[in-house]
Length: 220
Image (cartoon, rainbow, N blue to C red; front, side):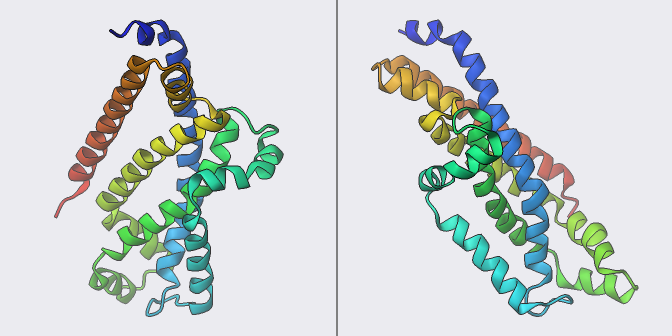
């Protein structure tokens, strides 16, 4: 029943590595750039100690603008940028460019929501003890929001695993590419079922690990 799926296993292992590479680059970019952007969204909001309404409005506009693009359109629109940064528009590294562009504002919004869950009284107490803004962020906000931040990172990885499968359709490689080339174009249903089952297992594993880690960090 799964003869075709078994035949492509060597190629599937390569595709798993390509998917992992795309995710690693996109998630790394999201943490490095989207994380600080999310912190800025919180700190510059009205009513905060570093309130900058104009800057906050500009940051919100940028985040909403990028998030409003359907990923497949963003994938095509960024082809010139992808060629400039990666030297090609095909392959997992090239596909990671639009994935990163989409992941940065996505994670920024998740970080903003996680940090807003920190009780305001804790922040005010830190300010009363003379803590600087940097100390409040590092020692209060990020520490208190750790469980929510882990769940936010989990949501990011799961969401962009599906995005990476979409990127495979336009030459990015990965598990999605296998599913389309063999499962759809060659009508090999067992390949489609097998790749979907694999993606489900990966998502379940990521969600389990993220939820478990979040619970261990939550001392409430």
